[in-house]
Length: 316
Image 1 (cartoon, rainbow, N blue to C red):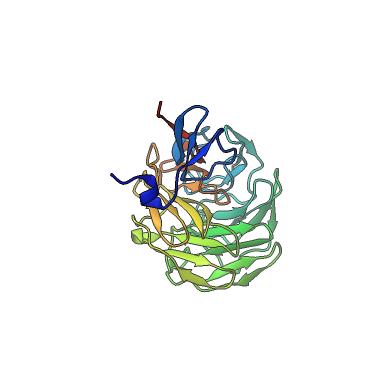
Image 2: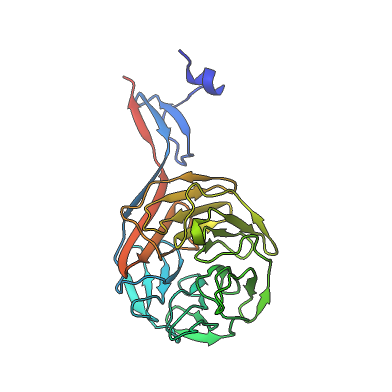
């Protein structure tokens, strides 16, 4: 029978006390307790605090313990809510109510851009900045768009994909410096209903209409095709960066979750309930994220967590 030394070329380390800083995949033998131990990464979804106002086609950003959601429908709203990791608190409304918008930034320094509000044509180019309590209108997008994606910070953000009032998919990227919008790199795949996460120089564009399995990565100037999703879908939520991302839920009401390592996607624990037309913690991580809202007008929130945790086998 093969042993660990034969398989891995290493002996199991013998120590008198457990390591203080665990590393995923670590194995050791505790001589004091006579136990064999390992440190796997344990990942799971758990229930979060419900939104105050249920909705879909909303925008979200921030982190698991400092999240922000705004806009959405039905009815079309400008309501904004902040998350502390357990409950949501309503804050100042958007100046322009709309759905199908997207945003980027943090709970105290965010941007909401574009979107839709009927009657037709209804496409919005308005951009607003959030300071932790109120929204203020700033420089409009160069052109209206809705059902797009976004990533970045208040002073270094991007919006990409989506479609315009002529129902044409948008190929260009617009970069924001906190004041003005300028043209960025052109997308390789032109679609809508995508999700985005990351920063202006580590952004990721995931999925899209017709259940595309496309992934693209942005380096601050150009987009590069990345590894394809295992399950193509759209209208989902994302968290992380171009080298470590989560893609959660999606149409039609999927529970599917996948994780990205910068080259390939792998299956992660499934959501408790399917969610589409939803949003997430776009500046979160792959071990601390949330997904919020969804069709039709849901107030559901789920939290994804991952931690390297010691597991024990008694060898006495």
